[in-house]
Length: 121
Image 1 (cartoon, rainbow, N blue to C red):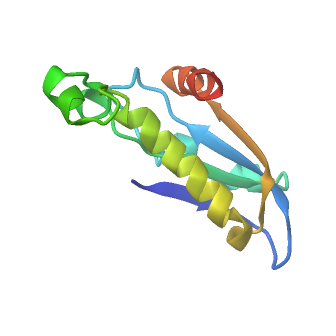
Image 2 (cartoon, rainbow, N blue to C red):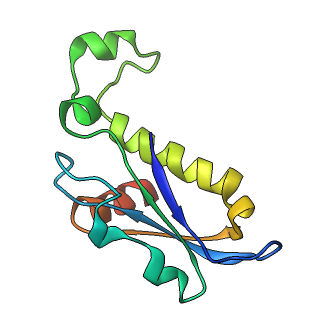
């Protein structure tokens, strides 16, 4: 998994953090497209993060054989698990980039906003 961090923070800062989840119908896209460049947001006094996650069948295929290997008997939410892992990484590491791990906003467009709702459920 990859994520991108933009910051203008100085040592000891604890700036608010905004985490962007890209759209694309859970089939296409990535968090490092030029239109998702977070540098402009850092000028507003935040640390910006964009994430990537598994898409298509690699991220969301539910299959009986995969479910049989799971201790919970389920499969198909690997892309969401990637998003959870990215948010855990932000929580555990964003202070090193001048961000406040207790002040994180997650936002997105299209499938990214759906993901935010799913993560909140």
